[in-house]
Image (cartoon, rainbow, N blue to C red):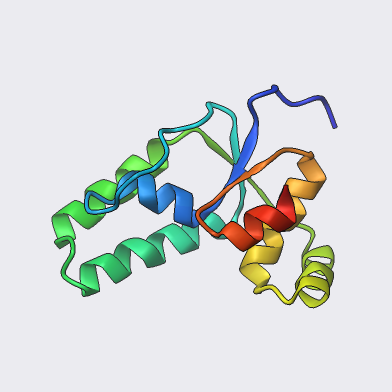
Length: 124
């Protein structure tokens, strides 16, 4: 694998939803133009936007606009190694989703940006 730019990071759904949702108190700006995430990120972001709609935090029009904003973010999606992700999930008592972020962080050897403090401690 070629060397990644020095500002490369792995981002998770908690970070991305915090950037997107208008009622979230964003503690981060977009940290990098070299963001990576496992492919599960798209499903998690869709689920987070949908949950916000169900909670009446946003309407359908804004939900669709937020999805379009997400699609414009410069995030490179990577398919995780599923077996290694399973082993990380077992070893660290993680969900399969979180294990895929941990796997990518370890595989790319870059920091994780997340609002999940326990996962950040484990990854970094």
